[in-house]
Length: 233
Image 1 (spheres, rainbow, N blue to C red):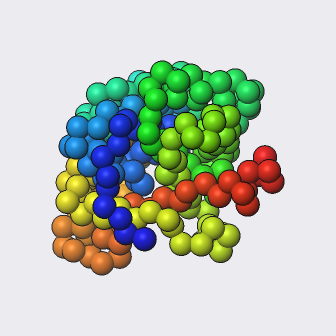
Image 2: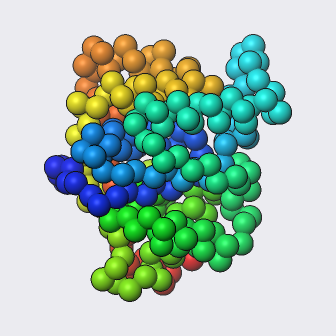
Image 3: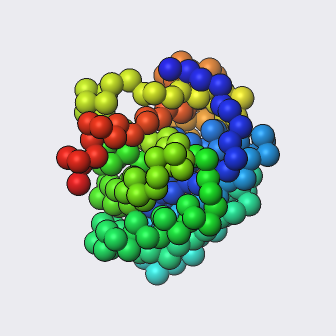
């Protein structure tokens, strides 16, 4: 369902890796920034186990974290986010962190920031173990709040069975007018996206329908409390 983006009191974004924000939310976040909405991005890791080291290699496992840290800051700058939090967890280990520790982390951010909207992944439908651990913590933290004090959640889901089990997305934002910012955000993460941008950028510039459908529309789900919570984790 396509909807107009409404002004929020503040927005908290929680993802585990640099570039998680770029693909599915950077257009939406750019719109919030332009509306004057405070946006905080809590990125749990520096993505130091990212697959791409370049051909020929431009980085090693030792140097990649600093590269990705700079890319993350550049991506936040492209969106216009002033409150970027690098939370210091190690890539591909979030799934092994104590669940209660992670819930308390998210609860602390919510208590501090009092967001009216939280954006993260949807548990069970976000593929990567670190995505899933992050999603669980976010949903559990929000669940613990009194119902009348819970922020809205916009959750990104992209596993192959998403529509089969969740149906069509509840929210669809047309971010065509933010594509320049979205492209800049994607390009900021060049260590991981350079290969993709070689084809994507010309396709978007040419108005390729498939590329526009994928990148100019950002889709989210509300959490299905009644159906999911008791059986999800």
